[in-house]
Structures are given as structure tokens and as C-alpha cells.
Image (cartoon, one colour):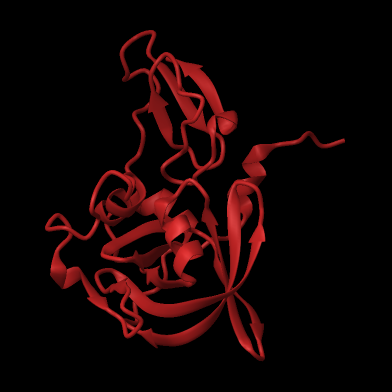
Length: 213
């Protein structure tokens, strides 16, 4: 009998997207890996957003968001900017993110133009509580193609964009590393906070294994 193996998660296919929202004067965005067409007549798109993301609450309150499809032209900086920091603590649309890299859609929400190939303006119709995430079933109110560059898949990100972790033996002797079993992200430190959330795949401490190098 085959054993339960979390690494099977690596075999699922994902795209990568910047999900943006506006609430009042606050603009924000986060990286998500789940946005799919779930019906064609009428056309409906579902997105799953982690409840730990500040963008999640903004979507729940306003019922609106934009999804920018990340292309293979993206650099790691785009993922760091929208995935490695929280909108609770920083303004992701301040001067650290060039104004030339995004525009504002008719729904008043920014969409990313740099290293993306399409965007969708979405209006939430239904919500499904999935525990760690909320599944939003949305009506696309606008969509357009921005470039012909191929979409960035999760596998492409892991193989070609994400910086490679240090090889075993190059870290200081005895250093403790917690490695995410889902995406491979590595947290360095003897103890990992119980409420730690992986900045890449948004999984919690339970999906990390402790490694001592």
C-alpha cells in the first residue's frame, strides 16, 4: 500500500496571479495560485484566497477584485513584493512599486501590467469557507490580454524564477532549517513561530519539516 506523501502536491498544476483589491483609500495585492474558470455559460471564475492575507478581508468586504496573470517574464522581485510582505504592515503601491508597473481598471482597482499577460475584473457572487482559504465564485466583468508571453506556472516559478536554496553543506554547521513540504521554502532558525505562514504557498507550520545541516 502506498504511503501518504505530501510531495504529491508538487504534481498538481497551478498558475500564478497577483490578486488586487481596494477598500476605501487602501490598495493592496497578494500572490495566489488558484484562479480557474469553473463555468462557461454563464462565465464564472473561482479564486481561493488564504484568510491570513490582508487582501482576503478586502475582497470579503467589497466583493470586488482584479486578477493579473503572471507571465514567464516575471522576476523574483514581483513575488517578493506581493508575496513576502503583508499589506497590514506596508503600502504595496507606494513608491517602492513603480507607477509604470500597474494601471487602474474601470472598477477602481489596480491591475499589474509589468510581467503579466492578461487581467480580469471580478465581482464576487458566492463564497465557500474552506478552512484556511475562502473560495470566491466570481463573475468576470472585464477581461483583456496584455501580452503574448506564456503564463508562469508554479512549476516554472520553482525551476526558473525562485532563487535556489543553499546546497547542503554550505550553511554554518548545526544550523537549523525548517523546509516547507509543499513548496520547498526554507525558514532558518532554531524555533519556528506556531503562527508562521509560508510566504510562497501560505501553508502553516504543520507542513514544515525540521532539518539540521
